[in-house]
Image (cartoon, rainbow, N blue to C red; front, side, top):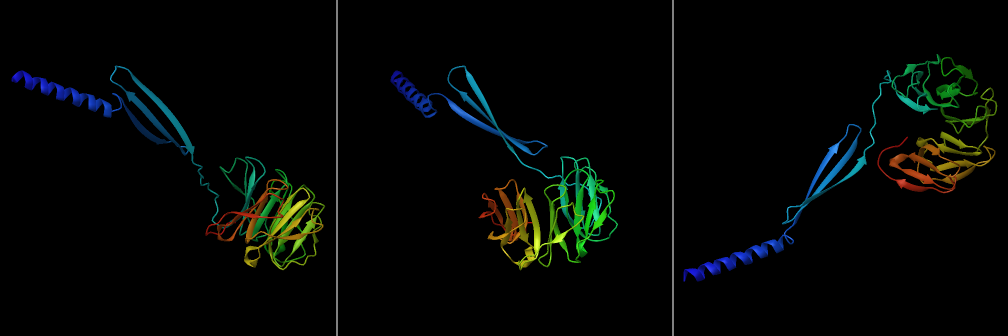
Length: 290
């Protein structure tokens, strides 16, 4: 009797062991152990180690690593507390910033340090443009146009013929330039700013920004005007056409004669691939983009 009981117990244990090994996938199991680390540069690295074991004495381990880079912005000390309105770099190291209360800042080390370079005119400065490391222009309130040829150490005034607020300046070489401002005002120079000629137009909106690529140019209305129209030229400002960008644009940039972007009210970003003839919205938010 005892012998039969032992046989039954052994059979039961054998069935249990076979069933258990079957449920574990024929004697093996896989363990994934993810580990996430973040580097000081902002790159997040996720490492997954996969270990397979079986009833035999062998064990295999494989590791895969994927890296996702997070872009970071570093705060730099400007040395001033006034509102800063525009920044421009002509290389990876040389750049300028302009702002209110005659603020002009210069860097030659990529922004690690900034040097103050006042124009001496005491006005709010709204925009700037440099064609190289030494020659540039600044525009601002009361119709002020300033030019430097020594990287901003000294500045000379150029005549605009107005006391309106000038919003933006752009040059496509060291002689041909454009300025836009309040009161639908728009100037052009062909001699490096020695003479600025006021251009006639029938536009109803104040003007906020100007950008050129070769003969092709674009002007956006000042955001406060409420207009969604962008003015476009293909003959270096000889004639202009109106194009609806479907957003109240504040700032415009073109990478070439076809591909450009505008940003503006309500977080809207609009993109054009045909030189500004048509525009498609790329993003919509709630903040004003400048």
